[in-house]
Figure 1 (cartoon, helix red, strand yellow):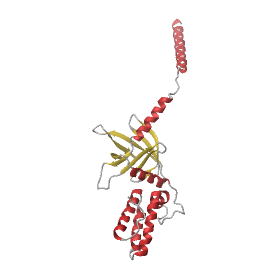
Figure 2 (cartoon, rainbow, N blue to C red; figure 1 turned 60 degrees about the vertical axis):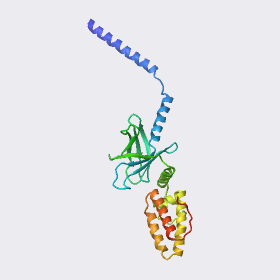
Figure 3 (tube, rainbow, N blue to C red; figure 1 turned 135 degrees about the horizontal axis):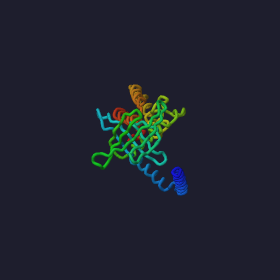
Figure 4 (cartoon, rainbow, N blue to C red; figure 1 turned 90 degrees about the vertical axis):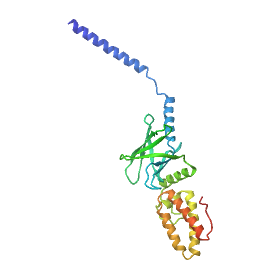
Amino acid sequence: MKDHCRRALRAALLLAAALALGACNKGTDTPPDPVAATAVEASAEHFQQSLAGLWSTNHSEGDDAETLYAIAWQPDAGLQVVRDGAWLDGKVEDVDLDNGTLALHLTSDTGPSETVTLRKLQDESGNGFTLRITWGAGQTDDLGFVRRLTERDRSELAAAVAAAQAPDPAAECETDAPAGSVRATLVCGHEEFGALDAGMRKQFKELADRYPDGDRTVQAATRQLDACDTPACLRAAYAQWQAYFDENYDLGDVVDYQ
């Protein structure tokens, strides 16, 4: 009987001590530190900024076989990634500083959404890193750093984003490009391409009016321009046809393509 009382007394004392400890801990909880939270946010932004640049896949089967990635970070737009001239419409879901990874959720109007992972891998020299992109289905691209973004790279990236975000070309936009094509979208939604197209169409008219083979040349040029599916391709096509016109015809120079 005495042992039973001792056990009951011991259990009561332990329970009282546990309740007292819980009350003590509850009373000493500290609120979140806003300074620490701001520091973590700043570190996440710095991580995204460190990815900025022009990157390329390390494997190649020809001069143009590499896949190029342009990555930029802006305070108002966040992280932007363009793959071979096509914008990857995505939002950063998570930045894991301990493991050097970033999760980017991509949305698509033509297919399922997916989350891709960008991971910084220290290179053998220890002075830099490579970038591994793992897609939702598990395939990976290992990227090597090419260079910092130039002004032309940034213009290219902005044009790709504008082309992807722009609605159908406005009806009043003056272009002979097929509705919904990359050329029509860029010409009607981006000042640079609007000027290039307007100048080229003036030369098309002069070419057709003054030269017997003008119509055939205009058709060939138009087919190549309309076949482009990236801003880089379209800009290069305008420049190539301008050079061809300068070499073979006496036409007015209306646009600077440099």
